[in-house]
Length: 315
Image (cartoon, rainbow, N blue to C red; front, top):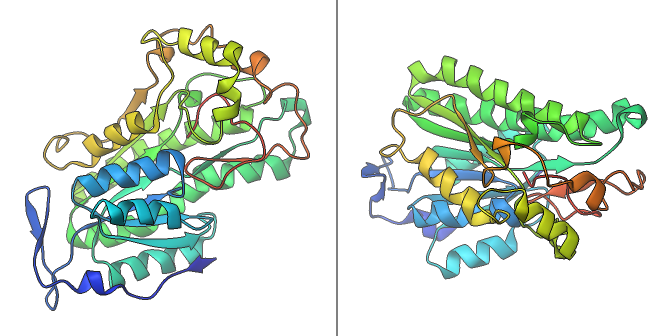
């Protein structure tokens, strides 16, 4: 499913916009280079969109629900932005969306694939439906977005892609076998894309967040026991914020600061990955194992708001 608004007059500006020191000029009109951000309705996706707008990109804000709140904030701050309602699991819809962005906004120069889901289910209760529901968004959805955008970038021999994975790609969480598999697969996909797309001028990297405070887990972290345990588990003494992730995306999409960086996964988890102990999220939080599997689906920021507190990290 794809819903695209009409072309905005603001994208018909006559001046040339700057992106990372390089002007992007169309033969008929001059448009800014575009950063496509999935999961942009709230949380990390919204923060990433705001940060990349500060960097000078026009924003294509994508989510399974309306990005109106994000768009209003971006425009109030002086940014150029358009919203697209699109299910990243849908190969054809993602392809149409990417072509629409290129036609209406300009060349896609950067991608931040942020959308993801967490649904905690004990392994012996995991079934193919639940497995697919998580893997199809976290892994296949990122593949769809990266594959379609990379085709446009390859024609220009330039681009930067950042996928938001998770520190769960490297460690296990109770009830998260399918989630860890999806994020580990994403890390592998990023490495393979970097190898094949590097000669075409496209850099591909990943970020692996730890626990990030977002609307999806705000209630959970408000529990003093849970919030304190999460903060103490991080050597830096706090959980993350969406801006922490946005700043990392900003670095990796910058063709000056990160011009020789590709194929990496950057842990942005306050140091939790140094030991992986002490957070006790699964036992302290209501996500697992005290799980109502009939209402456990959580679309993580920036995806749609979920029914339950999110899992061990918010990507």
